[in-house]
Amino acid sequence: MSFLIEGTHPYDVGTLLNQQGVAVRTGHHCAQPVMDFFGIPGTIRASFSFYNTREEIDYFIIALNRAVNMLR
Image (tube, rainbow, N blue to C red; front, side, top):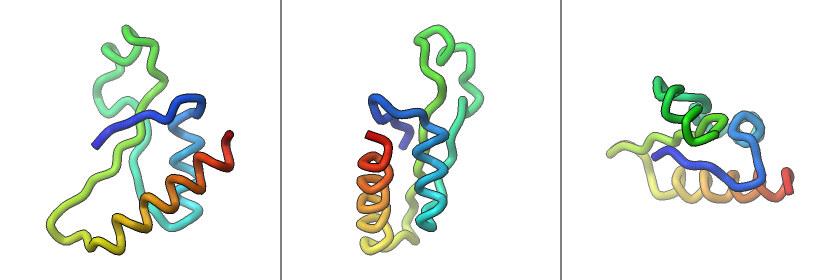
């Protein structure tokens, strides 16, 4: 799932998530031409699979909220 948080830079959000032990990818994800066209500096991408637990997903949401609150 790729997303943006309005008013923040993807790299800043990614760094704050990393500091909380949450791994995400940030950047252009092989789509730089289309992101340049839309004026998007990059996105944050979280990957979930069958092996992720509900607790891990809940922690991701908590950590994401913390990161966003730090940047606003």
